[in-house]
Image 1: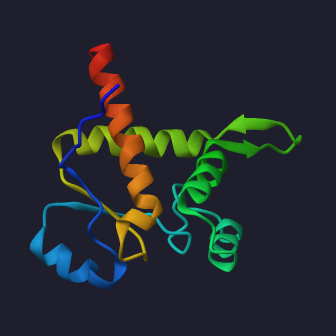
Image 2 (image 1 turned 90 degrees about the vertical axis):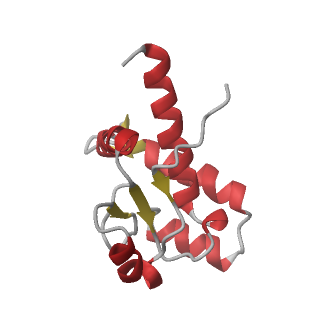
Length: 134
């Protein structure tokens, strides 16, 4: 399946230039997907620290992040789908179908930031909705 690039989802903004970018795009939505912002699509402190400490390869980091975002352990110790993440992804995918969305994080280079992964996930959700006729 070829996933089209949604130009409404931008990953070229990072926190150091957020104010400047907001001024250039006053009607856009800026989703700060960091742990500090307590965003459900951000990596845990544990994963971030481990990735930086051992210079984890990016593909391994993304694999671990995808597992971390997908599942939570409930009070009884059962593994469950992370409904908060699913809801946020659905919300952002729907919004960015027709509106400009910037995914914002600390990393300057989006190629080595989780926002590039989140963008791909949003595009896959959008493509699946189009295929289903939603």
